[in-house]
Image 1 (cartoon, rainbow, N blue to C red):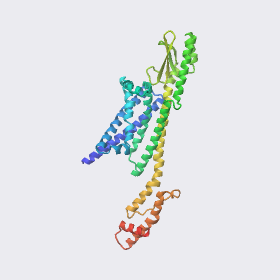
Image 2 (image 1 turned 90 degrees about the vertical axis):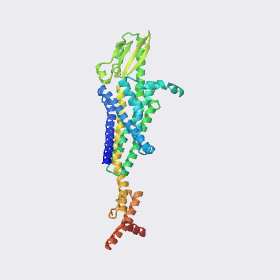
Image 3 (image 1 turned 45 degrees about the vertical axis):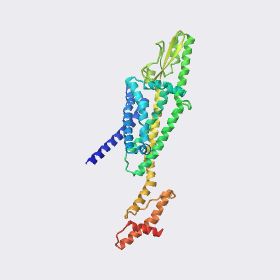
Image 4 (image 1 turned 135 degrees about the vertical axis):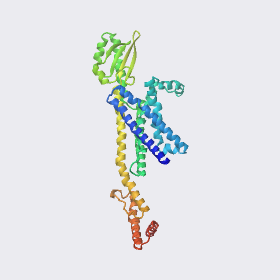
Length: 402
């Protein structure tokens, strides 16, 4: 009775973890899809902030499993052989570097990134690294890609109708393929962020800086005369500048049609609005506010492409490769094993013409043409003599004809 309760509790925990994995996959998809479709900013922020609860849950799950395996002397085996490293990279780094700092910033107004930079500035200066807050956040956000590794966790929770061998091989193939995809995009992101490869966002940034110089030069040249009219004419086809202020006084503001296209254009939406400040003559400052929505939308679209790629690849492996592996490896091995173990199991291994040169089917051919005939002769001989059949007799007879 006590053992049944323990098994039921373990099953309940595993199903709960599986349910959370499915939820976090949905959350990962919605976090980018909501930005791409331009849902309300309040809903977008709530979806993003929900990530901290999932990261806390999976961090607790990883630590619990890891400590449990360590106490049983299986910590190394769990981490490297049972895909514990997947549990690790899809929990602790995301919690400490992404979701928790963003949660504290949104809820408490506490910028954990700036505190970290402040307390480690001696370390960065020792390494001769210019680690500003902007550069640090840009570097940290690259690891968001690790979110997609969570898809792999589902393989450890679902028990398929196929054999353990098939499940294990499919899990290994899926892990290699998905990890390769994630590493490819991770390295690509790093190279793009540091200017080693071209990036669409960098082109947008260059265009903004060029436009800013034109605006400042126009102001200096015209000395404030009809500057608002000049801006309205210059920016009539621009759909990224929200507002321009000089010493806090508006001189240009996008119309409602443009603001609707920009979606999130409040000055408080720091993730979706960027501000440039430039000094003007006579102690004046011009502030130019750009919408970052289209850039964020492009990033969200790229993330959705990567997410979709991983899902399509995984389903292709599960649906197509599973069938191939099962028919060409698992099924022949199963038939031969059953033939060796059970007296009355006398089925042939089906050998496909185009696969007959594979090692497994060369072995299967020997099984069909040598083992099974010897087994059948021995079975018939013993039945004719009414002798109790033993598998050792069949094996002995098989050895004699080799």
